[in-house]
Length: 97
Image 1 (cartoon, one colour):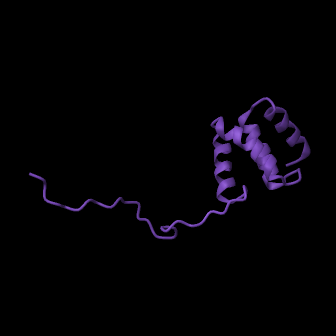
Image 2 (cartoon, rainbow, N blue to C red):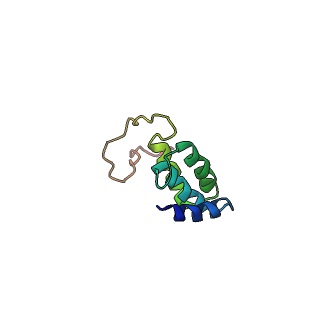
Image 3 (cartoon, rainbow, N blue to C red):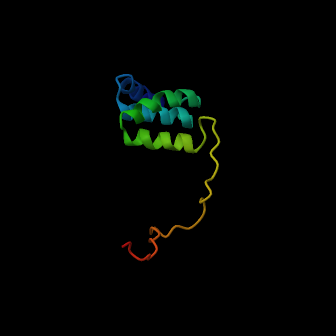
């Protein structure tokens, strides 16, 4: 992303445009046209996600999932196990009287 595009996004982001805030965040987390800065990325990303912007919410999920905030996410006990998409059926117990 070029400096011109970044300037346009900044113009709109400062006016609380959630999509622009999400795009600015993407620039800072990826280092596109700016020095990579995860603190600035989060500064722009939180309001975008809170405003309900789908891109902002998706990027925020990626931000935390990838550990950009410095936390380590460990796999759950069910990670990697196949899922057939069906819920376990309750047992066929006799009905209560």
